[in-house]
Length: 223
Image (cartoon, rainbow, N blue to C red):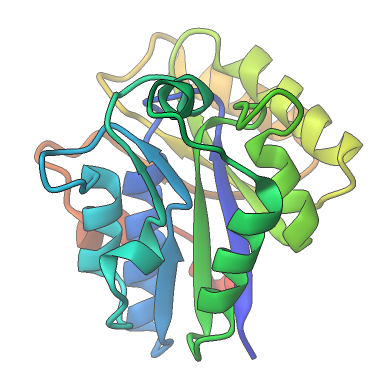
């Protein structure tokens, strides 16, 4: 049976792709067939490829084409709805959901759908990436970038996920940069206030190593 999760973050640059790669490695080590989708990516090279999507492809087991992993690749590294406007392209949740379902039904045991930015990133005048997760009715994994402001961002995101009727299955504390002041105190505050389990703490790894990061995750929660 395929199990699918939507990976979101407290902000942009908090390490959603890094954590997604670590989860894919952990699933592979557990003997699962894995796939990942980056439905919308803003910021691509001359070949139309996004670095985040390429990293996901490197860590998953299923041999998907690039266009399956990242069906909407936008050139400018700006908000997706603005990049789409500049390229005169239309982003629609129903179309993205259909593309995601195609991968979800492809035979993988473990599928991740990685968002862009945070929970409420707009796709068009009416829809956000949150609407994609709602339409797919999948559980949500929250990547908390452990830096100043993370408590407010994490609590507000968790409230929004619950308001949208989805389950926050867990959160992962990730250090995208140097350790923040009072890291442990911030972590304990989040543990008390977030109504979801802490699934792992990933320290800053330079260079990033998905295998090393995977050792810091509690993958038992996904079995």
